[in-house]
Structures are given as C-alpha cells and as structure tokens.
Amino acid sequence: MTTPSLLILPGDGIGPEVMAEVRKIIDWMGAKRGLVFDVSEDLVGGAAYDKHGTPLHDDTMAKAQEVDAVLLGAVGGPKYDVLDFSVKPERGLLRLRKEMDLYANLRPAQCFDALSDFSSLKKEVVAGLDIMIIRELTSGVYFGEPRGIKKEGNERVGINTQRYTESEIARVARSAFEMARKRGNKVCSMEKANVMESGILWRDVVQEIHDAEYPDVELSHMYADAGAMQLTRWPKQFDVIVTDNLFGDLLSDLAAMLTGSLGMLPSASLGAPMANGRPKALYEPVHGSAPDIAGQGKANPIACILSFAMALRYSFDMGEEADRVEKAVEKVLADGVRTADLMGPEGGVPVSTSGMGDAIVAALDASL
Ligand code: IPM
Ligand code: MG
Image 1 (cartoon, rainbow, N blue to C red):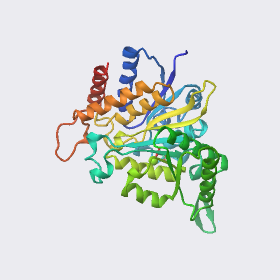
Image 2: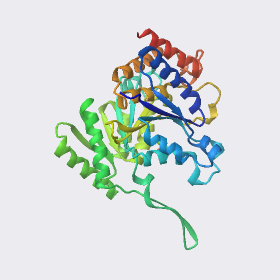
Image 3: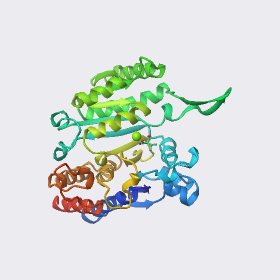
Image 4: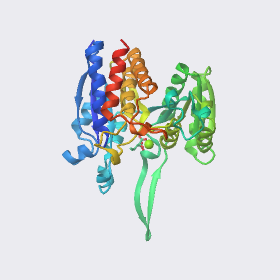
C-alpha cells in the first residue's frame, strides 16, 4: 500500500497554532502506531495572498487535487477586509471546495458529557446530543449565476442566485441516507419549499431518492426556519439533517453552539471517489480564524484535532485510530483539562493551545 498523503493548509489567525497540535497527533501515529503519512504543507487564505497575491495559488490547488486528503486550519482576518472580493481569503477556501467538487459537508454536533453545562440551553436538552448535519457545499446561492452588484437606473442592485440541479440534490441526498444507515437511520431534509422553487425541487428529489433507493431510512421534511426552531427546542429529535449550502451554513453554526463551544467541532467535506477508491476530501474545524486571540496560545485545538480524526475515519479507513483520538479528547475533558474557551463560571486555570495538544498526546499514550 502506498503511504497515504496529506496536504496541510494552516491558513490564517489561529489556524497555524491549532495545526501545530495536529502535527503532534500525526507524529504520534507514526511513532506509536506505525501509521506514517506523507505530509506536505502550503498556504491558503490571507497567508497565500500575502505571498502570492492570491488566496490560493494554482500549484496549491493542483496539489490538493492529488493528495488523499487536505487538512485546513482557518482563513480570514480583519487585515484582509479591504481586499477586493475576488481575492478575499474566503475565496481560497471556496475555490478548493468547488474545484475538488466536495459536495457533501459533514458537520457533526456532539455534546461531550464533560461540557454539557456549557450550552446556553438546559443540560437535559443537550446532554448526549449527537447529530450530523450534511450541508450541500458546491452549489446553491454560494455559486449560482447571475451574481454581482449592478447598476439599474440610478441605483445599485445586489444579485445572487439560488440554483440547484436534480443531480446535485440527488448526490447529497444519497450521502445523507448512507450516513443515516450507519447511525440512527433517520434523515430530516430542510429547505423552504413554501417560498422557493429550488426548495420544491429539493423536497421532491430527496423524496424520490428515498423511495427508490433508501425506503428503509425514516425520512421527514421541514422548512428550514422551523428546523432552526426545532434545533433549539429539542435537538435530540434529529439524527441526520440534510440541507442546502446557505441553510447548512446557518444551521450548522446554530447546532455547533448547542454543544457549548465552537472550538470543539470538526467537519469533513467529501466528493466523489478518486481512482484509489477514496473520496476527494478536505477536513477543517467549523470555527474560523479567531483573529482576536491569534498568536496568544489561547485557541482550542480540539476541533482541528477531531478533524484529523475524521480524516482517519473517512479517508484512510482507520476508524479504530479515529476512535482512539476521539476517546483521548473525551478523556482530557473528563479530567478537567480546559482551554480558555471552555472555562465555566467557576473559573480555574486554562491550559494553552500546546498544553491541550500535549494532554491529548499523553492520553493517547495511556490508550496503548
Ligand atoms: C463555513 C464558513 C464559510 C462559509 C466561509 C468562511 C466562506 O462560514 O465554512 O461555514 O460560509 O461556508
Ligand atoms: Mg459558516
């Protein structure tokens, strides 16, 4: 078997700091489990713009297409707010998603027992929560044409287009049904079929794929606004949620915060299988670049470390090692190790970013 390849794109803000902790886990896998990765590193976002004048160099894009998996930190920062839209850091990330055709974005929202007091919701509402949002990632209003800011008479008009083809809906629906079969066997599809034609098509296609290919999976449909309400009212009613690009962006932030900290949640963006049978894949934390705390050693590296665990599971067929990393994270949290974002009202002394990474490595050692 060839050595699995991994392209690391730390990006901006806290990205490089949290990625340094992932490196420790990767090194541990090599040293203690004999699982060696061919790791390369490159620039994305503002860091790439600073060096190349573009948020994603063509060479980096080409490399991303070749590797087995890409692991990304975060992009963006206030320094880049003044840039033209076409070269903003976020465009680098959107180009990766689009050109790698990563249509299924898996965003788990899981509440760790040790943190069930952290949610803004009552403990009983979130304790044990384990849902998976599958967000369509390569189409919809993020990419639809026409778009732009145009002049109409003597005023400007901002235009974006929500557009979905049947096949785009069908493939992400299949991802959701496949995922549900490995979990609680339940899918809730969310759109706005009451006001949007693309929502009507979305609902129809999801139902058709269900009836033809996955009749064993329990399927329900919900308007996305009602979905947001139900997610805060009683989130444990859900197993897998499948939704479009923009609703998925909003609902996944909402779901993430149910669990108490955005600093905890990983994501996987998957495309079609490559020649070697592995899906095209990019893994990244759900949180952003947090410029306000960048460079201070305060960031929580867990979301990025759990993103690497998702890579172990979905790209490298190393589910047992993924479990090992996830259990190590659970253990350090149960032991009371906390970065600043996880400090409760009772206070205490937070560990640094690298302190959390070291604690997780120690927990991995203890797992052997
Ligand atoms: C996300 C982010 C991105 C998005 C930004 C950074 C382009 O909010 O991954 O959820 O809107 O998709
Ligand atoms: Mg978002």
